[in-house]
Length: 236
Image (cartoon, helix red, strand yellow):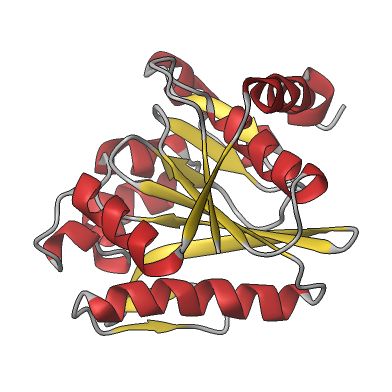
């Protein structure tokens, strides 16, 4: 499988760039399996059919500088920051269910090689015991499937709780303790640092590297503009 690599840059990329990068790889690059990992500043990403104001605590996000993005896959809201890892898988697999299954099995391979007893679920989550460590979503382009997911190495639990709107009663009655009872952080199960984990994942899953050209990065930036339009974010 190809690992897709960006040219060396010190410029941080927004979450919308990586969504556009998935789309570029799916539409423009050679066929076959491709994979890359990414991290972003504190952000909330919500599904293609969700209403932003109903799902996201917009005032909290603005107050804390948390950026908001819509993706083209379904599913619910996800909080992401520099401490957790985002995974993108692009494949020729036309059956989305099979693509999901392959992606989940990739994660399970990595985790089990690290000695973590993880399992997949029918909801395309990855669990360690009864706690979630990874969630996934997918969408289909002609001849290609894109599957992306979060891998919770670590995270800002306060932001995860408050950035996504669970309703005040749920917030007051459950709070952070309940969130921590539903999820688990991979750092508590492995001895690797986040950078070491990224290296391990890449070496386990990929057998070569394809570095994008500056012109490809420019093309991705053009696609990114479509993710930043108000009519896309707010479904106008």
